[in-house]
Amino acid sequence: MHFFHYQDDELYCENVPVQRICDEIGTPVFIYSRATLERHFKIFQEPFYDVDHLICYSMKACSNLAILRVFGNFGAGVDIVSGGELYRALQAGIDPSLIVYSGVGKKSSEMDEALAADILMFNVESEEELEVLNQRAQAMRKRARIALRVNPDVDPQTHPYIATGLRKNKFGIRMERSAELYHRAKQMKGIEPVGVDCHIGSQLTELSPFLDAMERLKKLIGRLASDGIDIRYLDIGGGLGIPYDDERPPLPAVYGAAIVEQVADMDVKLILEPGRVLVGNAGIMVTRVLYRKQGPEKHFIIVDAGMNDLIRPSLYKAHHSVWKIRRTPASKSPTEKVVADLVGPICESGDFLAQERYMEPVEPGELLAMMSAGAYGFSMSSNYNSRPRAAEVLVDGDDYYVIRDRETYDDLVRNERVPQIITSN
Image (cartoon, rainbow, N blue to C red; front, side, top):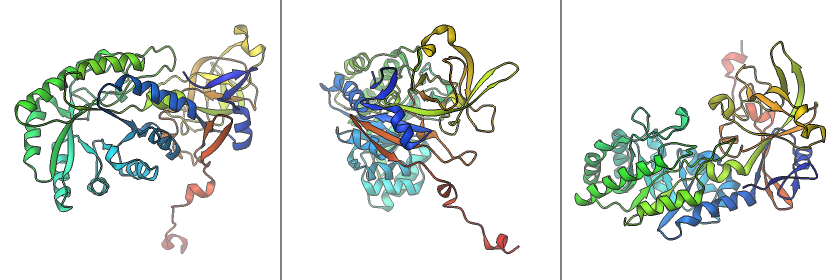
């Protein structure tokens, strides 16, 4: 459920007309609903109340400071994958003891920053990473708490670009190799093995991949315990999907109950890393229609947002529902719909937001909302074609707040320099 709804045929976010935001802030713009963010967090957490757990929001989904603070107010930690995300998390007031550091390519400087902050745990992805982390921790006279990210070779039944738990993926350490590596880690002076980590992919719509992975992790933890290695944390990652179109992912209550049943007899603290399921349907991107164009084979609706603003359709062939900000009686009639591609201004044929979509009739100047754009929308946006990135807005009841200013042309060149050797010619 989300708090985007029509009132007298006008789209509102909570109690604020989306048209008003766009008239005052411009387009493209990402708009988030605080009520939806908070509701999703509470619903996700509810099934886990009876077990020791920590929710670490996977902030790569949407890393705006205001969004982080919303979840931080509920006592959430974060799952980070870069030094920049660590910096953002600390700036948002997240307690370092609630931060888990994932990712396959941690630089030594990023390790140093996380060690200095004294984060909860590193999710180590390779043997060489473990060696470097041991060296950095000893140099700083610290011990790095770690979990090995185990690759269970489970098919997550999702898009291949966001599958992470198969043998062919770059993520994690082979299950059969992990026990030996835990023994090595235990002997390292700068390392303290405290957990086991696993994340098999994103936008999962079935329970079975989660449960298959859990069964394999339980066996590994039992084997490690018999070898004298005490595992205190079980990090099962995130990945629960959301409905973009006709998907029917498990409800958080069903997902949570199944996971709780799996860990009921285990003496571990459960760490969960939800991202998309918390923010995906809590945000929209609004764009304005510029032109209509009838090609030899297709009808195009050209808007002021492109693949640099919302790359998921181009990158994953992802579906985002398109809602008109203001509906008219004619637009609600199925006979009036046309088949069109919704495209942007980027100089790429792959620049589209929707393809061969039954679209309600539109006029230049009308506003369209790309629904379910809260996750991997702004966070994956870019300045391609020298386009300033969009503004971000958070709605709270009757009010809205700009939580990121729209970039300007000055922002595009702020960090660039022309060497004197060029200007002197």
